[in-house]
Amino acid sequence: MEKLTRRSFVKGAAAASAVVAAGAAMAGCGSNDTSAKTDDSKKGDSSSDKIPMTIGYWGGNCCELAVYVAIENNCFQDNGIEPNVVTITADTSELLANDEIDFFLWTPGFFLSWLQGANAKLIDTMHTGCWSGITLEGNGIDSAADLKGKKVGCTGMSGPSYVESNALYSRATGGKGSEDINWTVYDGSLLLQALKDHEVDAIIGIDSTLYPQVKDTEGAKFFFISAQELSDYYCCFVCCNSHTLEKHPEAGDRLAKAFADADDILRKDVDAAVEMAIEKGYTVGKYPNIEKGLAKNYLYGHGNEEDFKASIYERWDELRVAGFLTDCPTDEAKAKEYLQELTEGIAEWHGDVGKATAAKKLSEQVKTRGDAFGTNPEDVKNA
Image (tube, rainbow, N blue to C red; front, side):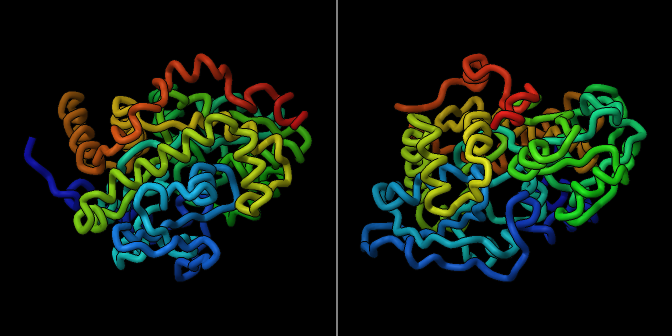
Protein backbone atom coordinates (compact mmCIF):
# COMPACT_ATOMS: atom_id res chain seq x y z
CA MET A 1 0.00 0.00 0.00
CA GLU A 2 1.26 3.50 -0.78
CA LYS A 3 2.74 5.26 2.23
CA LEU A 4 0.27 7.90 3.40
CA THR A 5 0.82 11.08 5.33
CA ARG A 6 -1.39 11.73 8.33
CA ARG A 7 -3.37 14.44 6.59
CA SER A 8 -4.10 12.17 3.62
CA PHE A 9 -5.82 9.60 5.82
CA VAL A 10 -8.90 11.82 6.05
CA LYS A 11 -9.42 13.87 2.88
CA GLY A 12 -10.81 17.20 3.96
CA ALA A 13 -13.22 15.48 6.29
CA ALA A 14 -15.50 18.07 7.86
CA ALA A 15 -16.20 15.72 10.73
CA ALA A 16 -12.52 15.41 11.52
CA SER A 17 -12.06 19.17 11.44
CA ALA A 18 -14.93 19.50 13.86
CA VAL A 19 -13.20 17.04 16.13
CA VAL A 20 -10.09 19.19 16.23
CA ALA A 21 -12.19 22.23 17.07
CA ALA A 22 -13.93 20.32 19.82
CA GLY A 23 -10.60 19.74 21.55
CA ALA A 24 -10.87 19.21 25.27
CA ALA A 25 -14.64 18.72 25.22
CA MET A 26 -14.14 15.48 23.35
CA ALA A 27 -12.34 13.99 26.31
CA GLY A 28 -15.70 13.86 28.02
CA CYS A 29 -14.40 15.61 31.10
CA GLY A 30 -13.13 19.02 30.06
CA SER A 31 -14.39 22.54 29.53
CA ASN A 32 -13.79 24.89 26.62
CA ASP A 33 -12.19 28.02 28.04
CA THR A 34 -9.04 29.48 26.56
CA SER A 35 -6.05 28.34 28.58
CA ALA A 36 -4.39 25.84 30.85
CA LYS A 37 -4.37 27.19 34.40
CA THR A 38 -1.38 26.54 36.62
CA ASP A 39 -1.95 25.06 40.06
CA ASP A 40 0.90 26.71 41.98
CA SER A 41 0.47 24.36 44.93
CA LYS A 42 1.50 21.43 42.77
CA LYS A 43 4.64 22.82 41.12
CA GLY A 44 7.71 20.62 41.40
CA ASP A 45 11.06 21.72 42.80
CA SER A 46 13.42 23.05 40.16
CA SER A 47 16.44 20.88 39.42
CA SER A 48 18.94 21.15 36.58
CA ASP A 49 18.87 17.43 35.79
CA LYS A 50 15.08 17.22 35.70
CA ILE A 51 13.03 17.64 32.55
CA PRO A 52 10.42 20.40 32.91
CA MET A 53 7.02 19.10 31.85
CA THR A 54 3.54 20.61 31.99
CA ILE A 55 1.18 17.96 33.33
CA GLY A 56 -2.45 18.66 32.44
CA TYR A 57 -5.65 17.23 33.83
CA TRP A 58 -9.38 18.09 33.79
CA GLY A 59 -10.46 16.64 37.13
CA GLY A 60 -13.96 15.91 38.35
CA ASN A 61 -13.97 12.13 38.09
CA CYS A 62 -11.88 8.99 38.60
CA CYS A 63 -11.03 8.65 34.91
CA GLU A 64 -7.77 10.46 35.73
CA LEU A 65 -7.21 8.68 39.04
CA ALA A 66 -3.64 7.66 38.15
CA VAL A 67 -2.84 11.32 37.41
CA TYR A 68 -4.03 12.37 40.87
CA VAL A 69 -2.03 9.54 42.48
CA ALA A 70 1.08 10.55 40.54
CA ILE A 71 0.73 14.19 41.63
CA GLU A 72 0.12 13.42 45.29
CA ASN A 73 2.91 10.82 45.55
CA ASN A 74 5.63 12.85 43.79
CA CYS A 75 5.92 10.25 41.05
CA PHE A 76 7.02 12.85 38.51
CA GLN A 77 9.78 14.30 40.70
CA ASP A 78 11.00 10.82 41.66
CA ASN A 79 11.48 10.00 37.98
CA GLY A 80 13.42 13.06 36.89
CA ILE A 81 10.56 15.35 35.89
CA GLU A 82 10.02 18.90 37.09
CA PRO A 83 6.21 19.06 36.89
CA ASN A 84 4.12 22.13 36.27
CA VAL A 85 0.63 20.82 37.06
CA VAL A 86 -2.24 22.61 35.32
CA THR A 87 -5.97 22.16 34.95
CA ILE A 88 -6.97 22.00 31.30
CA THR A 89 -9.45 24.64 30.22
CA ALA A 90 -8.59 24.85 26.53
CA ASP A 91 -8.50 22.90 23.29
CA THR A 92 -5.75 20.30 23.72
CA SER A 93 -4.79 20.45 20.03
CA GLU A 94 -4.07 24.16 20.48
CA LEU A 95 -2.14 23.52 23.70
CA LEU A 96 -0.04 20.86 21.95
CA ALA A 97 0.60 23.02 18.90
CA ASN A 98 1.80 25.88 21.12
CA ASP A 99 3.85 23.49 23.29
CA GLU A 100 1.88 24.61 26.34
CA ILE A 101 1.30 21.05 27.53
CA ASP A 102 3.46 17.91 27.66
CA PHE A 103 1.04 15.32 29.07
CA PHE A 104 -2.68 14.72 29.26
CA LEU A 105 -4.85 11.62 29.41
CA TRP A 106 -5.56 10.58 25.83
CA THR A 107 -9.10 9.29 25.28
CA PRO A 108 -10.66 7.80 22.12
CA GLY A 109 -12.04 11.25 21.35
CA PHE A 110 -8.61 12.58 20.38
CA PHE A 111 -7.57 10.10 17.68
CA LEU A 112 -8.95 12.11 14.79
CA SER A 113 -7.10 15.21 15.95
CA TRP A 114 -3.88 13.25 15.47
CA LEU A 115 -4.88 12.62 11.86
CA GLN A 116 -5.14 16.37 11.44
CA GLY A 117 -1.62 16.90 12.71
CA ALA A 118 -1.76 17.00 16.52
CA ASN A 119 1.81 16.60 17.80
CA ALA A 120 1.20 13.71 20.17
CA LYS A 121 2.46 10.19 20.82
CA LEU A 122 0.94 7.45 22.96
CA ILE A 123 3.59 5.84 25.16
CA ASP A 124 1.73 3.44 27.50
CA THR A 125 -1.75 2.44 28.63
CA MET A 126 -3.82 3.96 31.41
CA HIS A 127 -7.19 2.19 31.79
CA THR A 128 -10.15 0.56 30.05
CA GLY A 129 -13.44 2.08 28.90
CA CYS A 130 -15.25 4.84 30.80
CA TRP A 131 -18.29 5.40 28.54
CA SER A 132 -21.84 4.15 28.67
CA GLY A 133 -25.41 4.58 27.46
CA ILE A 134 -28.65 4.64 29.43
CA THR A 135 -32.33 4.36 28.64
CA LEU A 136 -35.62 3.96 30.53
CA GLU A 137 -37.47 0.74 31.20
CA GLY A 138 -40.10 0.22 28.50
CA ASN A 139 -38.14 1.93 25.73
CA GLY A 140 -37.28 -1.40 24.13
CA ILE A 141 -33.52 -1.02 24.37
CA ASP A 142 -31.40 -3.67 26.05
CA SER A 143 -28.19 -3.27 24.05
CA ALA A 144 -26.66 -1.16 21.30
CA ALA A 145 -28.10 -3.66 18.80
CA ASP A 146 -31.59 -2.34 19.64
CA LEU A 147 -30.91 1.25 18.56
CA LYS A 148 -32.21 1.04 15.00
CA GLY A 149 -34.87 3.71 14.51
CA LYS A 150 -34.42 4.98 18.05
CA LYS A 151 -33.74 8.60 18.95
CA VAL A 152 -30.51 8.90 20.92
CA GLY A 153 -29.23 12.03 22.63
CA CYS A 154 -25.54 12.91 22.71
CA THR A 155 -23.32 15.94 23.24
CA GLY A 156 -21.70 15.58 19.84
CA MET A 157 -21.55 13.19 16.90
CA SER A 158 -17.85 12.52 17.21
CA GLY A 159 -16.98 11.74 20.84
CA PRO A 160 -16.00 8.39 22.34
CA SER A 161 -19.47 7.29 23.47
CA TYR A 162 -20.87 8.13 20.01
CA VAL A 163 -18.14 6.19 18.24
CA GLU A 164 -18.37 3.21 20.60
CA SER A 165 -22.16 2.89 20.45
CA ASN A 166 -22.07 3.18 16.66
CA ALA A 167 -19.38 0.52 16.42
CA LEU A 168 -21.22 -1.83 18.79
CA TYR A 169 -24.43 -1.36 16.81
CA SER A 170 -22.76 -1.94 13.45
CA ARG A 171 -20.85 -5.01 14.60
CA ALA A 172 -24.01 -6.54 16.06
CA THR A 173 -26.35 -5.79 13.18
CA GLY A 174 -24.26 -5.13 10.10
CA GLY A 175 -26.02 -1.77 9.74
CA LYS A 176 -24.64 1.76 9.82
CA GLY A 177 -25.31 3.52 13.09
CA SER A 178 -24.87 6.96 11.55
CA GLU A 179 -27.79 6.17 9.21
CA ASP A 180 -29.99 3.79 11.22
CA ILE A 181 -30.00 5.70 14.51
CA ASN A 182 -31.67 9.10 14.94
CA TRP A 183 -28.96 11.11 16.69
CA THR A 184 -29.84 14.37 18.42
CA VAL A 185 -27.25 16.74 19.89
CA TYR A 186 -27.97 18.40 23.25
CA ASP A 187 -26.03 20.43 25.74
CA GLY A 188 -24.79 17.95 28.33
CA SER A 189 -26.84 19.57 31.10
CA LEU A 190 -30.07 18.89 29.15
CA LEU A 191 -29.54 15.25 28.17
CA LEU A 192 -31.10 13.59 31.21
CA GLN A 193 -34.18 15.80 31.10
CA ALA A 194 -34.61 14.98 27.40
CA LEU A 195 -34.65 11.30 28.35
CA LYS A 196 -37.12 11.86 31.19
CA ASP A 197 -39.39 13.88 28.90
CA HIS A 198 -39.24 11.12 26.25
CA GLU A 199 -37.75 13.48 23.69
CA VAL A 200 -35.16 10.74 23.18
CA ASP A 201 -35.17 7.01 23.79
CA ALA A 202 -31.62 6.86 25.16
CA ILE A 203 -28.61 9.01 25.97
CA ILE A 204 -24.86 8.33 25.93
CA GLY A 205 -21.88 9.85 27.70
CA ILE A 206 -19.11 9.44 30.24
CA ASP A 207 -19.62 7.04 33.17
CA SER A 208 -19.03 9.69 35.83
CA THR A 209 -22.14 11.52 34.62
CA LEU A 210 -24.41 8.61 33.69
CA TYR A 211 -23.88 6.36 36.71
CA PRO A 212 -25.20 8.93 39.23
CA GLN A 213 -28.08 9.65 36.83
CA VAL A 214 -29.05 5.98 36.82
CA LYS A 215 -29.01 5.99 40.61
CA ASP A 216 -31.12 9.15 40.81
CA THR A 217 -33.62 8.39 38.02
CA GLU A 218 -36.55 6.01 38.42
CA GLY A 219 -36.56 3.35 35.72
CA ALA A 220 -33.17 4.28 34.26
CA LYS A 221 -30.88 1.46 33.16
CA PHE A 222 -27.73 0.88 31.11
CA PHE A 223 -27.86 -0.51 27.60
CA PHE A 224 -24.10 -0.48 27.12
CA ILE A 225 -21.09 -0.15 29.40
CA SER A 226 -17.78 0.01 27.59
CA ALA A 227 -15.95 -1.47 30.60
CA GLN A 228 -18.08 -4.57 29.94
CA GLU A 229 -18.55 -4.74 26.15
CA LEU A 230 -15.04 -3.50 25.29
CA SER A 231 -13.22 -4.77 28.36
CA ASP A 232 -10.38 -6.43 26.41
CA TYR A 233 -9.12 -3.05 25.20
CA TYR A 234 -7.66 -0.03 26.91
CA CYS A 235 -9.63 3.14 26.35
CA CYS A 236 -7.24 5.79 27.63
CA PHE A 237 -3.49 6.20 27.23
CA VAL A 238 -0.47 8.08 28.53
CA CYS A 239 0.06 10.80 25.92
CA CYS A 240 3.22 12.87 25.49
CA ASN A 241 3.78 15.91 23.30
CA SER A 242 5.94 14.64 20.41
CA HIS A 243 7.91 17.91 20.42
CA THR A 244 8.89 17.15 24.01
CA LEU A 245 10.05 13.68 23.01
CA GLU A 246 12.19 15.16 20.26
CA LYS A 247 13.68 17.81 22.55
CA HIS A 248 14.21 15.48 25.52
CA PRO A 249 14.79 11.86 24.38
CA GLU A 250 14.56 10.66 28.00
CA ALA A 251 11.14 12.26 28.54
CA GLY A 252 9.13 9.28 27.31
CA ASP A 253 10.79 6.79 29.64
CA ARG A 254 10.55 9.15 32.61
CA LEU A 255 6.89 9.91 32.05
CA ALA A 256 6.01 6.26 31.48
CA LYS A 257 7.86 5.26 34.66
CA ALA A 258 6.12 7.98 36.67
CA PHE A 259 2.75 6.58 35.67
CA ALA A 260 3.89 3.00 36.17
CA ASP A 261 4.78 3.94 39.75
CA ALA A 262 1.43 5.69 40.22
CA ASP A 263 -0.37 2.69 38.77
CA ASP A 264 1.44 0.37 41.21
CA ILE A 265 0.31 2.51 44.13
CA LEU A 266 -3.25 2.76 42.80
CA ARG A 267 -3.70 -0.96 42.18
CA LYS A 268 -2.56 -1.88 45.69
CA ASP A 269 -5.61 -0.11 47.15
CA VAL A 270 -8.10 1.31 44.65
CA ASP A 271 -10.53 2.41 47.35
CA ALA A 272 -7.84 4.39 49.16
CA ALA A 273 -6.86 6.11 45.91
CA VAL A 274 -10.47 7.16 45.31
CA GLU A 275 -10.84 8.40 48.89
CA MET A 276 -7.68 10.48 48.44
CA ALA A 277 -9.03 11.96 45.19
CA ILE A 278 -12.28 12.92 46.91
CA GLU A 279 -10.53 14.35 49.97
CA LYS A 280 -8.15 16.43 47.83
CA GLY A 281 -10.99 17.74 45.68
CA TYR A 282 -9.97 16.09 42.41
CA THR A 283 -13.36 14.36 42.05
CA VAL A 284 -16.92 15.36 42.91
CA GLY A 285 -17.40 12.70 45.58
CA LYS A 286 -21.21 12.76 45.65
CA TYR A 287 -21.37 8.97 45.51
CA PRO A 288 -18.02 7.59 46.72
CA ASN A 289 -19.08 3.98 46.23
CA ILE A 290 -19.93 4.66 42.59
CA GLU A 291 -16.50 6.20 42.08
CA LYS A 292 -14.87 3.19 43.74
CA GLY A 293 -16.90 0.81 41.58
CA LEU A 294 -15.92 2.67 38.43
CA ALA A 295 -12.24 2.77 39.39
CA LYS A 296 -12.31 -1.02 39.76
CA ASN A 297 -14.10 -1.29 36.41
CA TYR A 298 -11.29 0.50 34.64
CA LEU A 299 -8.55 -2.06 35.28
CA TYR A 300 -5.75 0.47 35.49
CA GLY A 301 -2.62 -1.06 34.05
CA HIS A 302 0.74 -0.41 32.40
CA GLY A 303 3.62 -2.20 30.74
CA ASN A 304 1.83 -4.66 28.44
CA GLU A 305 2.86 -3.82 24.88
CA GLU A 306 0.63 -6.41 23.25
CA ASP A 307 -2.49 -4.93 24.85
CA PHE A 308 -1.19 -1.41 24.11
CA LYS A 309 -0.95 -2.04 20.36
CA ALA A 310 -4.16 -4.10 20.19
CA SER A 311 -6.09 -1.38 22.01
CA ILE A 312 -4.89 1.42 19.75
CA TYR A 313 -5.78 -0.68 16.71
CA GLU A 314 -9.24 -1.32 18.16
CA ARG A 315 -9.87 2.40 18.65
CA TRP A 316 -8.95 3.09 15.03
CA ASP A 317 -11.19 0.23 13.92
CA GLU A 318 -14.12 1.66 15.88
CA LEU A 319 -13.65 4.93 14.00
CA ARG A 320 -13.62 2.99 10.73
CA VAL A 321 -16.83 1.14 11.59
CA ALA A 322 -18.46 4.40 12.68
CA GLY A 323 -17.67 5.90 9.27
CA PHE A 324 -14.97 8.42 10.20
CA LEU A 325 -12.06 6.89 8.29
CA THR A 326 -13.42 7.51 4.81
CA ASP A 327 -10.09 6.73 3.14
CA CYS A 328 -9.87 3.27 4.68
CA PRO A 329 -9.85 0.63 1.89
CA THR A 330 -12.89 -1.64 1.71
CA ASP A 331 -10.70 -4.66 0.98
CA GLU A 332 -10.25 -6.47 4.30
CA ALA A 333 -6.51 -7.10 3.96
CA LYS A 334 -5.79 -3.55 2.84
CA ALA A 335 -8.01 -2.16 5.61
CA LYS A 336 -5.99 -4.06 8.21
CA GLU A 337 -2.77 -2.70 6.72
CA TYR A 338 -4.20 0.81 6.80
CA LEU A 339 -5.27 0.52 10.46
CA GLN A 340 -1.93 -1.00 11.40
CA GLU A 341 -0.12 1.93 9.79
CA LEU A 342 -2.23 4.33 11.83
CA THR A 343 -1.46 2.34 14.97
CA GLU A 344 2.28 2.39 14.36
CA GLY A 345 2.15 6.10 13.54
CA ILE A 346 0.62 7.25 16.80
CA ALA A 347 2.36 4.76 19.10
CA GLU A 348 5.82 5.20 20.64
CA TRP A 349 6.12 2.47 23.24
CA HIS A 350 7.95 3.37 26.45
CA GLY A 351 6.18 0.96 28.79
CA ASP A 352 9.13 -1.39 29.19
CA VAL A 353 10.49 0.91 31.92
CA GLY A 354 7.72 -0.44 34.15
CA LYS A 355 7.84 -4.01 32.90
CA ALA A 356 8.84 -5.43 36.30
CA THR A 357 5.38 -4.57 37.65
CA ALA A 358 3.46 -4.72 34.37
CA ALA A 359 -0.24 -5.53 34.42
CA LYS A 360 -1.47 -8.95 33.36
CA LYS A 361 -3.19 -9.19 30.01
CA LEU A 362 -6.60 -7.53 30.10
CA SER A 363 -8.32 -10.79 29.20
CA GLU A 364 -6.93 -12.30 32.41
CA GLN A 365 -7.80 -9.25 34.49
CA VAL A 366 -11.38 -9.31 33.23
CA LYS A 367 -11.76 -12.92 34.32
CA THR A 368 -10.56 -11.97 37.80
CA ARG A 369 -12.77 -8.87 37.99
CA GLY A 370 -15.90 -10.49 36.57
CA ASP A 371 -18.78 -8.45 35.20
CA ALA A 372 -18.32 -4.70 35.31
CA PHE A 373 -19.83 -2.68 38.13
CA GLY A 374 -23.23 -1.52 36.89
CA THR A 375 -24.14 -4.56 34.81
CA ASN A 376 -26.17 -5.73 37.80
CA PRO A 377 -28.80 -3.03 38.49
CA GLU A 378 -28.33 -3.55 42.21
CA ASP A 379 -24.72 -2.32 41.96
CA VAL A 380 -25.68 1.30 41.40
CA LYS A 381 -28.90 1.16 43.40
CA ASN A 382 -26.99 0.14 46.53
CA ALA A 383 -23.92 2.34 45.94
